[in-house]
Amino acid sequence: MEYSNRENINLIEKIKEHAELLAALIAGLFILLAWRLDTSGQTTASVILYIVAFCVGGFAKAKEGIEETIEDKKLNVELLMILAAIGSAAIGYWTEGAILIFIFAVSGALETYAMNKSNREISALMNLQPEEAWLVRGGFEPMKVSVSTLQIGDHLLIKPGERVPADGVIFKGQSSIDESAISGEPLPVAKREGDEVFAGTVNLNGAITMEMTKPNSETLFQKIIQLVQSAQSEKSPSQQFIEKFEGTYVKFVLLSVALMMFLPHFLLEWDWTTTFYRAMVLLVVASPCALVAAIMPATLAAISNGAKNGILFKGGLHLEHLSVLRAVAVDKTGTLTQGKPVVTDFIVREGIEREEALSVLAGIESQSNHPLAQAITSFAKAEGVIISSQVAIKDIPGWGIKGYVNDMEYLVGKPDFVGTEEANSFANGATAKLATEGKTVIFIRDKDGIVALTALKDTVRDEAKKAVALLKELGINVIMLTGDNEKTAKAIAKESGVTEYVAECLPETKVTEMKRLLSQHQFVGMVGDGINDAPALATATTGIAMGEGTDVALETADVVLMKNDLSKIAYAVRLSRKMQRIVKQNIFFSIGIIVLLIASNFLQVVDLPLGVIGHEGSTILVILNGLRMLNKNV
Image (spheres, rainbow, N blue to C red):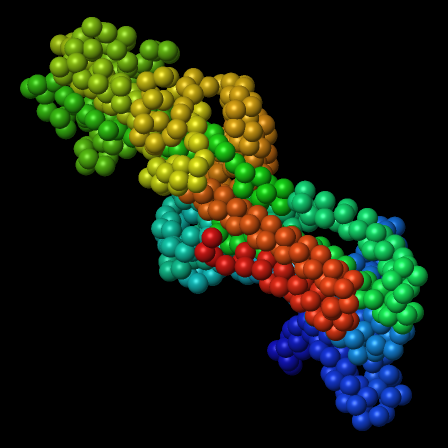
């Protein structure tokens, strides 16, 4: 019984969704029957059916037009079409008027489909978040509870095949997670204890227990939904201009039609029937339906396309701005690079065992929380070295660490702490070469001199190199902004392939540089992920935040990359440029058709049926052209 009710509800929802199209088709059926009756001489019956077709097909658009006119206190395209249909009927052209209503209803249904297509992407996203979860407490069996009752700190069991109900960290177990709903990437991601998981993603194989870290209202999934909903409601400057233009244009058309009803009779000696007929044709062909539909369907389709590919636009304005970008400023740490230093070189003094030296160094560094120390410890573990455990340390702020292993004292730090001259000459002067490669060099020294040096570097992401190359192919300059020193910045810039770089940047320096770039290139994007990037993100023409960045960066940015993949920027630019091409095609095409039909009407070449087909056909073509933005290939 419950299943049957659910089926009935789904059927009702589908009927509601396609109500406009069904009304148009029913109107078309009545028109066909009315035409058959008219050809067989049953004029009264045919007129009645035409009137029914008018009411069924034109109700939705007439209601929409009247409500918008009252609300906005200005005339609109819908009223023009209704007046044209009534005017056609008034002079005896029932068939033409009904066909006008029919095609107008079909084009309206198609436009509604375009809107709904984008909205369905959001509905699909919202349906991905589960409503129930398995709550684990103490030694009791997991119990199924509503997601709305969960609190931060709750432990949740996620079985294979189930969706993750909340944002959190894996507490126990390991599995592969399908994160395509978040990042747009189809390949599963391996997750283990300590790794983050996100609401709406799918646990593919192993059972895992997670600890909830965010309330449901603040999950990454909810942010995605809110961002896309906001983007759909925000109109681009082009759309706003068209809507303002529409009201003025409609008044101009009505004035032209009013003059057309009288002037040709006196100036061109047309009879009154021809004069009124041509006025009705003008009312049809001069209506800007296609022009009004030139932008919105394409914009919504582009926003939907981006969301499916892990790119969130906060509105049509930002989508338009991307098409004219001439430069992109990129933060280094966490954007171009991994944001975590790794050991690239480990060189020991002659006569010293490599494993022993690394064991001592890692034992000392394991007592520190500094990122460089953690990188050295991780390197030792990866090398399979047993880390010394009998270690005592003394931190020397601003210099380094004194370590004591088996009653022997070691100094760990930069050259000026262990002895500049000896450090610089160690390993045939390797320090200078490593520094030019943008690497940080750490030394360990015992009573006999330098034992070993360790070179560390924040490595450039492979996808970052690809992204920079793709942007340069699109004619966009890439500028790296970093707080690092000149040597490190130069090395990273060379490796990543950026056009230029600016070293030793503070947050306020980034804003200054952004203003300089804006004056130089006019349209500049900024990519960042940290709190220090927020001012520059706000200053840029288009701020682009990495999805794994801070909340401040996500809130400030205009575009969000849900996965830290810079190559998505090039995709977003191509998407934007394609949208602009389609919008321009639509505008030129719709204006061209209007001018052609108006000229043909004055020359009495086009009659009302052909005018209806030309006008409404162009509207349908414009909408279909806009829906091409849903294609994945851009």
